[in-house]
Length: 339
Ligand SMILES: *[C@@H]1O[C@H](CO)[C@@H](O)[C@H](O)[C@H]1NC(C)=O
Ligand SMILES: *[C@@H]1O[C@H](CO)[C@@H](O)[C@H](O)[C@H]1NC(C)=O
Ligand SMILES: *[C@@H]1O[C@H](CO)[C@@H](O)[C@H](O)[C@H]1NC(C)=O
Image (tube, rainbow, N blue to C red; front, side, top):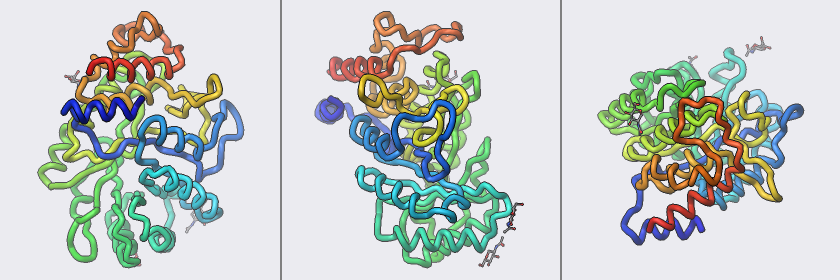
């Protein structure tokens, strides 16, 4: 049915302005959930579900440099299962230790770049606070011959883009060098982040550069967060000349306990994977239906039938207790019904 919706949009000439990449962060390279509400399925199974059922085309695979060093084969298996879905894969190496040296990062990225340079659907995301180290890593990666996109971390809030915009490839160009942003809503979702993102968009536009939002999320179970998170993502989709993609945090191997971890891990209900509301409506829904507009999408959900209270932001205690495939299917059905 999703395919029909997309096709209908194209034929109706209503193809939405939207970002190239939509996806989820799949933890899994790091040690897995061992206690609490562990996810019902593996990161591999979730990527298959997201790609097939949600049309997602980018999975971010974060791993700490320490975990990578101790078991790079498990990480490679996760990368291969991502590639197998047909999506692009963002290899994101974080450092749990602030003293990780220039040299050890460079050798790690030499391995990765050499291994994946012939796979154009692989993107690399660097992490370091030091522009000098980032410049060294860009040069290191390009020296292997890899031309894959590299994302540079502008992940502080508010992001400081200036030092990153001046980093270059060895040939002096900025070709395939993009920025990585993180955009979480505050705990009570008092803002939809569009004021900050408007400023960022303006800097990027002036510089002729692009960014991927590599982490984003909002608190589950709060109707206001559902509204504001959808608003943020609609804004991102409305500015695809500077925002290349939006990657939701987070699914994969982490606990599904939502309040604690901003988890958007799909649940297992009735023998199938079922997306959480923030994922179904605000990540996938805004991408698929961005011409329709967020409020329209939410109205289509027929709140009185599903019990979702999206239009009463002040009743902070209202809960989204409905399995979100109900919301999602009404949503998708509603979109095709419009055409
Ligand atoms: C970094 O710090 C950790 C913990 O203090 C230590 O075990 C490790 O040897 C240090 N690594 C380097 C490269 O200094
Ligand atoms: C990182 O290493 C490169 C050479 O391997 C060196 O030129 C550069 O100055 C180093 N940067 C830092 C911040 O240590
Ligand atoms: C985001 O919030 C601002 C302030 O409330 C509002 O003016 C704006 O329309 C919202 N953005 C979207 C895309 O809904």
